[in-house]
Every structure is written in structure tokens, then in C-alpha cells.
Length: 400
Image 1 (cartoon, helix red, strand yellow):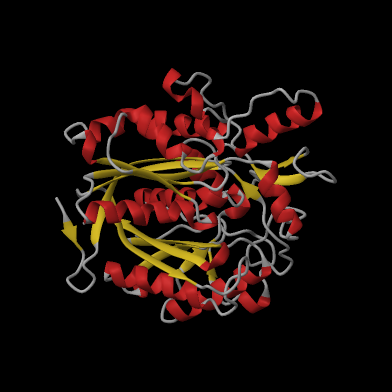
Image 2 (cartoon, rainbow, N blue to C red):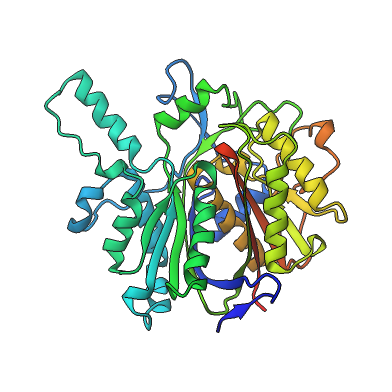
């Protein structure tokens, strides 16, 4: 059944009956839980990305599907195989959930920032080193490739498109999917995000001097930048009630700087407050906040300033999970949404924040410590803040 959260906001909550998330944390909900509450490192130190040194990355180390359908050959890339590996884990439940819905009312919105670039990098290296006759198709690295491939694979006929707004991409897919349902343009929407490791992004962030020399330290006194990771996370949004709901979305745009956030966190604050308002929920009702928490000096400082203002009357538990997954860029919002959903389903744990010394200027917050269990949580918030000041906060909760 449809649900309108409040007459004030006119935001239609959507159910999330099916979800999956693959990352450096692993491929199961048990993996996610265990690796987020334990201190063991989940990142890998790898060579081959940067010319002068190895770098820590969050790699998905389990196998990907080897065979893809003939009608997807033109889209083939590691990014696509990662996507299909995730999809196949929920495909039976997904098809059952949409069995009574017309294909014309089934839509797809996904986020990515890398698409199939890693495969093109390998081919271009061969092209320039040994084989200038090599035919390199641009199709697998097109940003729209992923949604087109999923539509072809599933046989769905509704709207299908990809969002690429850097680190907010897959969080914005949730907002776009919800709007399609609320506008009565779809009855169900597959949303999420997929990004894969590639030299382009590692070298890009290295040129910005934003890569950490070690495991990243969100809000740490010695934080020096990010680790980059990869993830594939997919979710079905529907009109119906479900055990987990998307209750609120808040979006804002800083328009401050091409790569730096507003130093006072004005856009971050606005996104969080709008998410609360659309859900008609107070800050005191939030049981956990998954920080964007990249471990860059400016991002962490501005986000905590915004947290102080939005949650001034509550000591909300919060943590960043990027020291465990890496920053998954276009898939970051999706994998962190998946983490929030697991917390709400289990109701007995919270992800531990990194355990190095916290910056004294940011140390007044309730960072989740190892072995800290949650009390009953009704709502959890996930923040994603991207280049250009593209901000979004998602508010998930237990179905009523």
C-alpha cells in the first residue's frame, strides 16, 4: 500500500523489499556485520595503480560471473560483471517481487563514476604499446551503459538511466527512483550504484594530493586523505510497505568550489535537515548516522560542523565506514545505504568508527566504538557529499 509520511512534506515513503551489497566487506550480510564491528583491516595494499608507489584500496576479492548473455556483449566490462554478480544474488527475489507488475512500469536508475573505464585502460595500453590496429569500443565506458545493460538483461521497459554526480551518484539514484514512483511513472524501480577500481580515479585523486599514505582515518588527528574502493549495491524500491523503508531524502548544492565543500558545511546541513523534514522526523529520533567521512581535512571538518547544528539536541551515534570499504565514489552512497539497512534489520550492532586518535577539534561527537551495540533503532541516516557541492542525505527506517 502507498504511504504519505505527512501532509506537510507530501513525501511518499517507498519500501525496500530486496537489496544486495558487494564490497571489500564481502558478499553477505554476515560479512558486513562482522567486518564492521571488528578491528581487522579489510583493505589491500596494491601496486599497478600509481607509477611511484603502492596504494591502499578497497577491492572486492571474491569471484565475478564469467559468462554473460550474448545481448550484453557490447556492454561487457568488469563493471558490468560486478553488477550482474550482485544482481544474480537477488534475482529470484527481485523477479518474484515484480511478477505482477507490467514491464512498462518497471524502471532502473543507477549511479556510477567509472563505468567500464578500467577495461578501456587495459586496451589503450595495448593499443599504444603494441597494437595500433586494435579496435576499442567506447560503449562499455559510457555512463549510460550500466542502466541500458540492466534493462536489456531484465527485460524491463520503463525509464532507465544512469546518474553520474561523483560521490553522490548512487545516493541520488534513490531520490530519482522515489520520484518516479511518486510521480506515478513507475510501480517499482531498481536503484543502486556500481564503481570499479581503475587507474584514472587513483591518479586523479593522487594529483589532488588526496590519497592517504595508509589506511584512512576519518575525523582522525593525522588524517591525510582517502582510500579508494569499489562496490556494487542494488535495491528494489516499491510503493508497498516493507521491513525497511526510505522515509526521507534531502538534496542541496553548495556551488562553492569544484572540488572542496563549503567550509561551514552549509550544504551538508541543509541536506540533512531536508531529509528530516520530508520524513517528518526529528533529529532526536535518529539512531545512527553514517558519515560521508572521507578522511580529508576539509570534508570531515565541515561535516562535523553540520552535524553539530542539525543534531545539537542529541548525542547521535555516528561513524564513517570508509576505512573498511574505501571511498567507493559513485557507489559510495549505495554501499553505505546497504550498511544502514543491515543495521536496521539486525537491531543489535553499529559499525565501528576508525580507532586512531580523533582530531580534538572534532572529538565532541558520539563516535561508535568497537563492540558498541545499538539500542533499538527506528531511523538511520546516510550522508553523501560530492565534488561541486552535490549533497544528499538519505533517511531509512523500519517499516511501520
